[in-house]
Amino acid sequence: MKRRFRVTVDGETFVVEVEEIETAPVKKASSTERSTAAAPRRIERRGQTDGESVVTAPLPGVVSEVRIGVGDRVEAGAVLLVLEAMKMENEVYAPVGGVVSEIYVEAGQQVGRGDRLVLIS
Image (tube, rainbow, N blue to C red):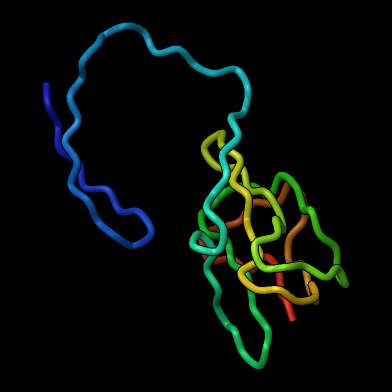
């Protein structure tokens, strides 16, 4: 049986058709799978003014790891933190180089799409 779905990815909408080809039971993974997002393209920057860049959550999830500290110098593309969403780990990258001025989240904290994560000056 074929089914059609409308899927939106990074603001772009696609219509996809899905067909069930096998009825074998689904095997559930017992551990968290690791995934990496493409550097700067997946990062949303909001509130960028006067050389500052606020890095926001690209998707809702739980902060599983913060890899930087206030005062750290980072380069564009450096991993800032890891978000776990739907049992996948997603690295969040620095969209610009600079110094970490503020960290708005901590490990274990739930965040929504667009929530502030880090301020880079």
